[in-house]
Length: 282
Picture 1 (spheres, rainbow, N blue to C red):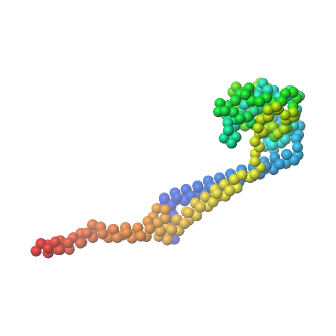
Picture 2: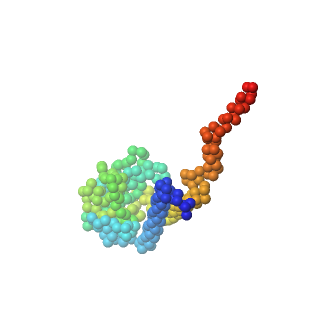
């Protein structure tokens, strides 16, 4: 056991702590990826289930001042009303396949006086963006729409200025427009009657599992590799190898030879050299 005393040295203790930390980080990142995989699977199952179930009346699912919950998101709802074109809100910086564009959000006024925010789709623009006057108008008169219920975004990106924003938040838009709106918003699926100039449909999430499973395995592999490397270096040090900081046996041998040829050895050889020198002079 005396050969394992190096494990209690400061360097090896610090090395072990670093490996434990890296292993823990890799484990947590792997769990995070598998959690995201589970969330994505749940979302995909919810979307597929809701598409089969069809649309529910909007006021049974959404209400003013009530947040959209995780269980409610991706429900399909149907609403009938009139678009308030003058209150169109532009969602900036929405690119598709490298092309600049915006999403167009228009309040749909319902029979009870409240409104629901409808993301009608994407409109391509140049780099300067667009205003509500630039985008095609929705159908006039009474319109029946269906769409997926979405949760409000959060953070600074939801601030509304000049009827434009970077992310949709019903409370922020309601305050900016001075309008009572339902909590959350909907991504348009169908619109009847259709607009004279339709927008590009809202991009729906792909119903696949993504790369999360393989990312999770990669993180766990990195953690296992760090632990394996630690024990390999420990074994190498134990059998006399170099370990992470030691020297190989060849280096140690060369160091020993150099020590034998130090000043004491040179002093011992000096008289013999002097005798040869005197012999040549005679």
